[in-house]
Structures are given as C-alpha cells and as structure tokens.
Image 1 (tube, rainbow, N blue to C red):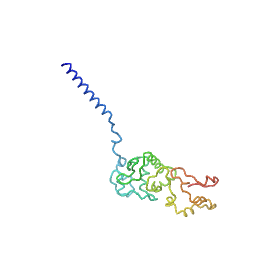
Image 2: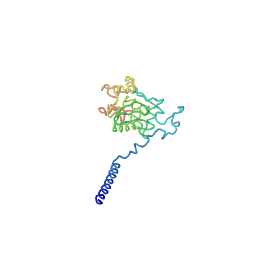
Image 3: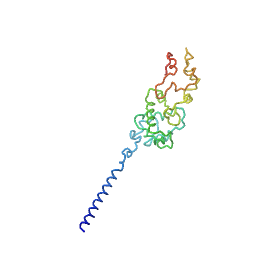
Image 4: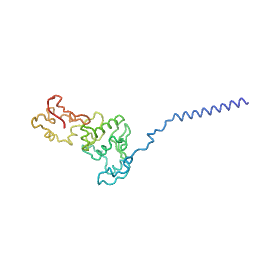
Length: 237
C-alpha cells in the first residue's frame, strides 16, 4: 500500500511539473507585444504646442492637435486640377525630412492612402511604392531639378500627375503641361530664336513630341535636339 501511495504521489508530482513546464513553454511562445504598436500616435502638438508662431500673420487661431485643425477650413483638393495648391505645398515642404507621412496621412499598404479624419483615398501604394514616393517627395522639396522648381511655385504632385498618386514609370502628357505653360502657340512664340527661327525647340521638324523628352521632373533635364545636333547652342533654363 505504501509503495502504491508513493507511486501515486510521485506521479501527481511529475504531472504537476509537466503542466507547469507546459504553461511556461506556452507563455514563452506567445509573441511579445510590439513596442512600436503600443506607442501612441504622434500629433502636431508634439512639436507645435502652440500653432500661433507657425501660422501666417492675421490667421485665425487653430484649435486641435492634428491635421484636422487645418482641414476644417482647408478642404483637401481631390479634383486633380493642373494648378498650384499653396496650402498643401507649403505644409509638405515645411515637414519634408522632419517627420513621417503617417503623422497626417492614413496608410494601409496595398489598400489605401488617405488623410487623417477624411474619408478619401488617393491610391493603394505598397511598401515599395511608398518608399519611392518618399524619395520623390524629397527631390520635389529640395532638388535642383524641375520638380523643385514646381514645388517653389506651390505645385504639388497632383498639379502634374492628377488625382491618383504617381507610380513608377508614369509620365505627364503635353496637355497637362500646357494647362499652365500654354497655349502651345504662345509657348512657341516665346521660345522662337531671333536669328535661327527653325531651331525653335517647341516647333521643330519632329512635330509634337512629348514635353518630357527634354523636361525631366525628378532628374536632370536635357535638350533632345542635341542628340542629333551636338553643335547647336541650346540650353534649358
């Protein structure tokens, strides 16, 4: 009897140890909570506890702690017009390289890209596409290319590319450029050389070629004519 009781006791003991070990193993196997996920979302007041110093002179007081303080009056432009947008351009330039897009924007990779507090989306960028957009946004704000020239004139991505977020390989059609720089006849008259009128880059023997053949948005522009006529004295302003 004593031997049997001892065996039962030992069996119960090792069973308890097994259960405890199992619990420890299961607890250890649970994924640790992400510190990043637990971190509270930053807001504008993290850097600007008072908006007054960064607002233009005479601007009414802005209440709130995120982009909603602005979009109450400055409604997001979803028209895709070829035009300047001073509010959007200045806001993006001021924060380029200083904060992350998701401070103001909502983004679900491959599903949507919108604006905090707004029911809209401009596209479905993946992680790779978002990285490219951030790179392009950086050149738009700071480069020596044509994109930064447009940025200084308050022309954002939408001004050239329309409603949807630009994707790799996208170009800009001539009609889009001429919305601001046309009509074509006026542009041709403006660039007609006085001494050699047949060397007008906007009225050449090639016909209506794409503006982007010469004018590159996010890299160095180049005079296309010089590929065949290297001795021509032609420069892009």
